[in-house]
Image 1 (tube, one colour):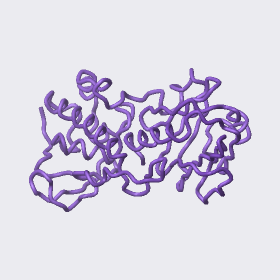
Image 2: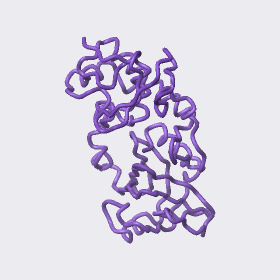
Image 3: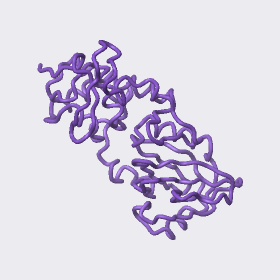
Image 4: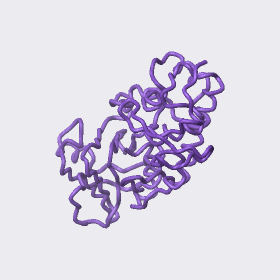
Length: 278
């Protein structure tokens, strides 16, 4: 699943590719992709709207449109966007085509068909499922030590699933959870409410730093992620633990191990990352 750095990379690409373009029509080939209206109503509501820009909240893309509307798009597992010249024949997995002016089509491609789109008035964006309870962005400005300490101390979860919960912090998925825990030397099965103040701050800094680094590398391409330009990211070449099971830890040389935590494959160093208590 594209995580925050990948979605942010897509957002930046879309702003360069389709900002200020006007939608002339929409074709929906998989009706379930639109959550709150029929394909015909979706086409009618979007035709004539201009894309003012694309924002992001967590893993959600927010297409800001004229007429005080926002198209909320969640890529889920395999969703992606790309542009092509007008009248380009859609591919097998192209579920939606936005026909734009300037002889351009914007395609939404999704091999797994898990992605979803919801068109709402601007005032109701934060009422969309998944956004209503979403946590702060993993930035220095938004993710404070005080906030992290408060929610960690209230949690009864292991730290790995805690990080994956979008209600706690927006945008972290399996890849970056493993990376941030390794960076801060915290075992993924450590109880969230057992972290010391020093560990909380180390984890906070690791989260912020890893997100910034990955965005600078245009995200991580492990399976199929591509930018809006159809290009792969490069942060997979910088990963310290994810996808490196059995390989030596970059800190101590111990072979990395993999376990299941909350049904998610989790790679860690058994020496550097010890389960600790306050």
